[in-house]
Image 1 (cartoon, each protein chain N blue to C red):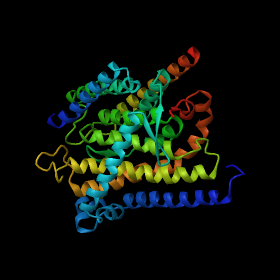
Image 2 (image 1 turned 180 degrees about the vertical axis):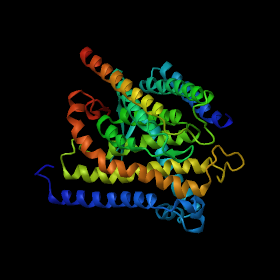
Image 3 (image 1 turned 135 degrees about the horizontal axis):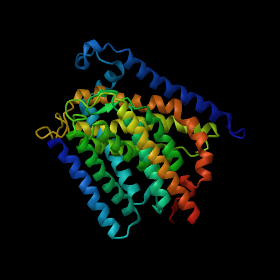
Image 4 (image 1 turned 120 degrees about the vertical axis):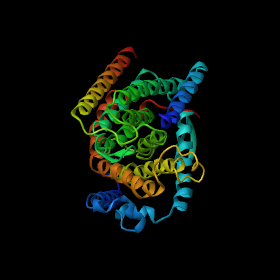
Length: 94
Length: 294
């Protein structure tokens, strides 16, 4: 856990910078804020996986498992689907 | 490849591709044929992985300076792109990207596909806690060349996600974030013809997209790990990661070079050529979305 403070600090920093830039109505603020929010969700998932004992972040990660591969495929499909949907929707609007 | 083009470009493309492929294949072959029974510590005795040994032989002082310059250049470029300033040749230009639903969706799509692709092989660990066999690296130049900045940011986020889900998340991931951004950013800026219909574009792809991108990314992350590691000239008394310097420069950095280069050299260019018409048709091609300011 102490090794993780640096990365937690980094994500919180990105979140704050993103929020400030978004409040200042800078176009890139939306992206940086999204990075920060995404980072928070990623950290939550990371700590859930650690505390669930699925892997150890110090001694040597996890072994290849079908669960990991299935999870990865789900992420890819959700990403592709969401991206396709958003792009199509944006095209209809414009 | 276009017939109007000077034959010298086609010849250059072939020569550059052969050189880059030879480096990538040699690095990979020497890695696979390394006698693992001797252990990684034999690098210090000059009996290590030959490709890694070549990196290590340059010395820690060399890497501290050269890696530092590389790191600084990468970080400045990353921050410039965030701030709406980009490099065009040797000139700086202001640009405007709307970061609307399409750009954010493209970023998210790249992040999910790259992140998922990476952590699908997260169990194939090479250096525990730091890197693994990553065939999904082949996606980075494709995202950069087709989607530009959203693709590069998606690549950075995808690497972060993969670090988390594969159990590699640490302060080192900050270097990985920008390093992977550069992996997509270099081909985005330097491969001028995304349709890949000319010899020049293939030469640019192999030189910048495969060689420079892979090396820059590897040195960027390597220097970051060295700088925050136990043998750092600055943070030695309070190291943020535990990777010793000889592992950083003798194993991690050269491995990242070949891990990036071998798949991008073989897979990425034809896939980019195949996907370009769709990216263009769907309005996702970066050159159709970016606006330069005078």
